[in-house]
Amino acid sequence: MLIRIVRMTFKPESVDDFLQNFNANKNYIRNSPGCHHLELWQDENEKNIFLTCSHWENEEKLNQYRGSELFKSVWAFTKPLFSEKPQAFSSKKLEEVEK
Image (cartoon, rainbow, N blue to C red; front, side, top):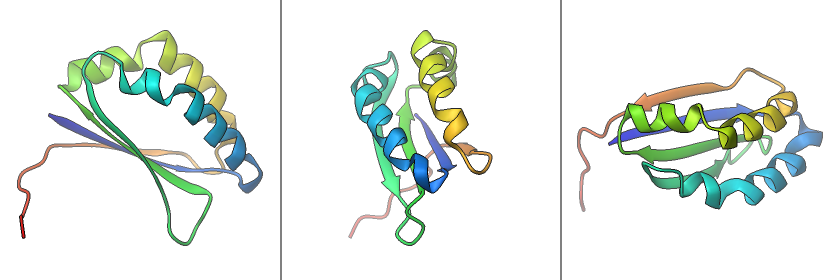
């Protein structure tokens, strides 16, 4: 399982546009082949900073999504809304500590 975190900082006036586009596409993204999980997070203090957390079967499935028309259209809409370059991290879970 590959966990992908993408940190995005938007122009404050573009947050609503981002959220509308995310909401219009989130189910398509989540139902992409190999996607097992999708979350959207918002920074507690900086309301124009968002993170997506997605779980992918493997890197190949993530790359297939990144090459899809869906990704290209979502990214083409989202990219001009940024105020900073996004940061992406691919990780794997090593351990989960239960209570």
